[in-house]
Length: 449
Image (cartoon, rainbow, N blue to C red; front, side):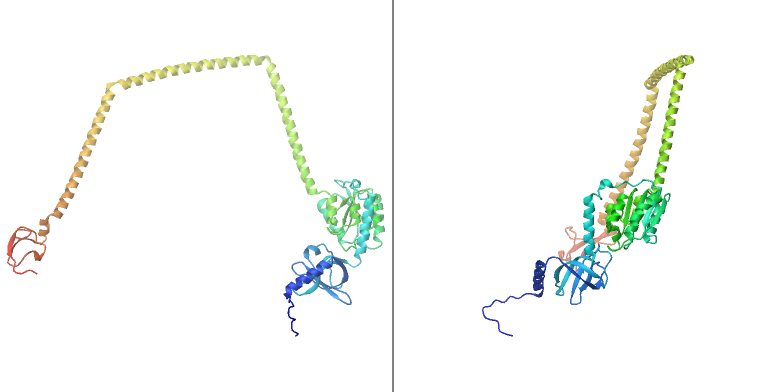
């Protein structure tokens, strides 16, 4: 290793730093590029991203196509497919490898078809073939439905299943045609011209199942588009999958995402029609009932007017008025008698209240009650005082020193009558008095301890 020249600054990069610099240089200097090659080592992990190698006979490049982009690529590529991709060139720093971030992928040769598709679409649009004003409304209750599709394809079965489920009342007229290859466009054009003549159909379903751009190319034919617009009945296109668009879709009166969707758009739901019939039936019954009630009410009004004009009506009204006056007189008399009766009862109650006997009896009962309460309170007071006396006597006996002496104790008194509590308070030769529970005696002190 040669020595570093003195005075020369040394720049040291981390591997990740240098990888980021290289990635920036490549991504900034190279815009999106178109690359053709053959797919190998194709893998699709659980994340949904695609990883593969794009190669030719002299080189290969690793590629990544992420889920949000590859979702619209149909069908999914496989090893050995020749494809054309639009991608950005970059570096994957984790492995330090050059890789392509694919933004668009198509089968080799599809680009020319797409250009032809866009050119024809622009041409017919400029002519006004796709104008919304030319679109015809679909029949609400189709009696016969024409189908132009392959007689053996799955699309036919999908359409028939949908028709049986939604609108089994309609007849079906099938005009089988090839839906792929060179013979398909002339056959489709002939079917669009002949089917309305052979069978009086109300609407035509032009359909086929999904496939690649090449598989659907028969529906990108200019003659097919013009035949759709020249057809005397509305045409519903249901070609491919939801993401597939053809020239026939733009020329048709209604475009459906799938053959099944075409059958659903062209027919009403018989269940909904049954519900509508039930609703109308209920509404009719309700309206009829309301009409009958209105007529009945009108009849009653006319009958009432006839009764009003009858001569006996006035006699009945006078008799009713007489009965009402009689009832009012009786009611007034009953009220007057009840008022006088109340006055008499109040006078009797006042007389009874002023009589002396009830008051005397009340005073006697009051005296008897007070005497009883006095006797009761006297007994209670005597009982309370007796109880308190016994408690005081018991307390006094407990404090009486004689009671202590009765239990076998003795009380020693000095010559001057003081109670002796300590042996040091007397000396040998002194005389003390000893009191017992009954009686006492004098004693001379021989010795103190």
